[in-house]
Amino acid sequence: MRILCTSDFHRSDKIVKNVLNIIKTKNIDVYINAGDFLSNDFAKDFFKKLKVKTFVVSGNWDWDMKYKGKYVSILEDKLEKYKDYYFFGVNPDFADADYFTKMVKNVPKEKLIFISHSPPYNILDKMWNGAHIGFIEYNEFVKKNKPILHVFGHIHENNGIKKTKNTTYINAALAASNKAYIIDIPSKKIETVILDA
Image (cartoon, rainbow, N blue to C red; front, side, top):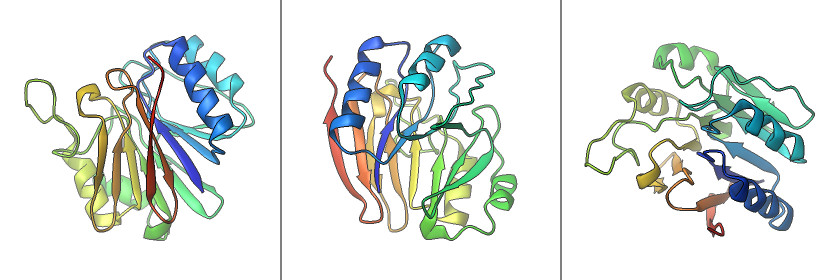
């Protein structure tokens, strides 16, 4: 399964055009967006153009994002199975490792994909001033449940990849780097894609 990971569009029509082109030309099976569209109308217009299974979480600049369509699932503390994998997305304003663990208790760890807007603490969460602002609760959740993939954004200046024994972390915030990532599951091979500025 080829998964495209992005976040933090910040209402950029250029990013929309680039992402739609990547989905079409790179044979993407699943698209993950970790939020921060900055406009519900902008997000909905984008969602209507998608023709591939898509999982979205809200960002800190997204309010009351709702959408019903054939391809798009907005995951707000929800779990959804797709092609033998379980996609678990969380609300940006709530973090409780024990509550989240209960929601995924029957999911095989090697089939779990975790999506949040904010990063886990001390993992691709460093701001320009050196401060780490990720969520400790996400670290706890990942430690307990060992998802194969954790996709997030929010911290534009720390876009990138980190791999551990069990989990691949992807900060897919586009706003500063214009870097998106394609990960092949289960091999965990990653391709970095530079979007046109």
